[in-house]
Amino acid sequence: MKRISLMLVVLTLLLAPSLGSANPNGVGSGTFDAQCGGACHGDADMNRSSTASVVVNAPSVAYEGLLTSVSVTVSDIETTSTGLLGFFLLSDLSGAGDTPADAGWTILSNSEGGSENYVEAVIASGQTEHTVHWTLRAPSVGTATLHASIHHGSEDGSEAPFFGASTSPATIDVREVPEDLPRLASDFEPPVRRDIGEATTITLTTEHVDQVAVEWKVSGGEVNTATVSTSGDNAWEFALPASLQPVQLEWRAHLEGEGPDQTTPWFQLQSEEPSWSVDETSAYVQSMAMLFVFIAAFLSLQRQSTTTAKDFDAFDSDEHEEVA
Amino acid sequence: MVSAPTLHVVTTELAVGSFAMAGIAFLLAGLGSHGWLGMKRHLQLADHVAHFALAFGLLALPFAIMTGIQSSPGEGLDHPLLINKMLLGSSAFGLAIGVLLARRAHGPDIWTRHLGRRWQALGGMAAVGMVLLTASLGGTYARGESLLSWLPFSFDTVPLMPLWFSTALLIVALVNIGLVRKQPSP
Image (cartoon, rainbow over all chains, first blue to last red; front, side, top):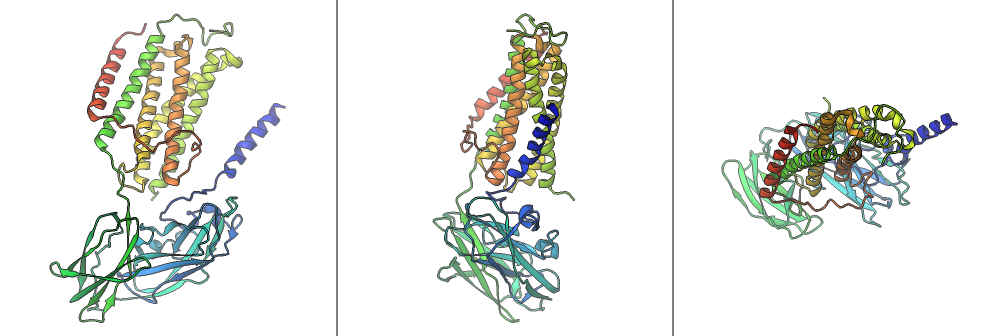
């Protein structure tokens, strides 16, 4: 009887983790291989096929080390209980070692305000299409491919792991940069986030550029032109207006020089509520104080309790079973 | 090269596993010291396991904290949950050290005292509970959910004291510890 009880307890403990191992609230944005982003969704024995279609859009030509823009559009999105939809940008679909970085790409930003290959978007009920943009620095010369995959839950909250992937990859011909091609400097990194109510001045560093024009727009809105001024050799400065609410602003630059004119991809700039801050010194000192207060309090408590007489032989016998 | 998030999982499981074992052992020791449920014959075993597991958990905890900071997506203490996690963690750390120091000072006799055995068992279990709550805050911060999300506690506000008050409290606590340690055990 005891063995059966023990067996039941062990079985319950073994089965319990599988009942609650899903992440219905997502895992947050991050740099993940397709498998690591959600093993249940990537496991062919466990997952279910999503009915959504996934398409990767990328330019057919990119220049080595220069910035390019890639977008992943998911249509026919299934409504889920949490609305969370995970997007992966991948260099292949092998399931391991398949982030863009593994193929030499460098992600500078994504349209959800981060710089990771995996982002989670919240899809409103009834919304059937969503696009995520990435800005990447191209790898070395050759033919590069980019895939995309998605994962999500179900509408009934059963946490079924749905998985979907692009049927065909985007193929990009990565070429050497022509000598006099007007371009952004290789060390230029566009800002990704800013606080609400804060205007942003961007200093653009370029190579082989004689003139710069900058356009900006609120996502899906009208295109405006920013005033650009020179700021030293191969440096240009322009200001983007402050936003009054969390919104995504996009901007791009037209570069003119001796070589063929170039237009950068749209760069995304997400404005967010100012981050929460605290006096860190006070927090650290209070933390230390709490540590020593608890030590002192417990030692004092135990010292006081030793003043009472011994009334129980703890390790010696079973004679005093009932105490106090 | 193993990434910080992977190491954090390993060290956290090491620390949480040790503390969980310590919590159960403190419960058994508390029952045994009162002679309840026929546990008295296991008191010595539970006593050793509880304190050893608690000490091992304390050794593993700094590694979990360091890898946790390295794998944190934000910069610095930029969220109320992180401050509360730090405050709760340091309180748990202090209570656990207090429990171990008390056991070291009084020896196995601590289980023979009318109040001492209760404080020791409750202190050990409270320290473990606080550590587990601290660990669960990591899940709440990273994934928006944890096993202990159902508890009626909100960690969105930070009970931060003025710097002068924290400093005064720290000094008083250090003096208190010095005095308690200086006095001979009765």
